[in-house]
Length: 94
Image (cartoon, rainbow, N blue to C red):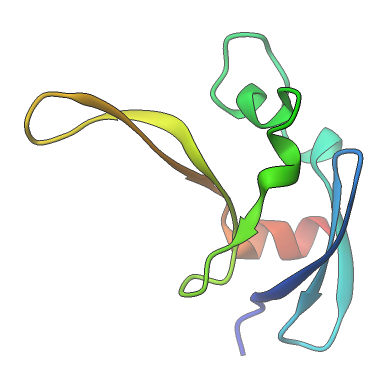
């Protein structure tokens, strides 16, 4: 069985405690996972009021944030997409 996130139990600071499909409860510390720099994409999750908007994707069963990752659509327009993390990396980190 591949470890996947079932639900978010608690968000405290930059730590997210999750229930995994393995039956385990693990806390992921994003201060240790993500290098913070002022111009990086991942630094956007640490902006005031953003970190707490994290969700669990119902299909991939990982953590994600809406409207953070800029991309160019087929029509040439720049849009904002989701920023997610590999659940295997999150599992090993927690």
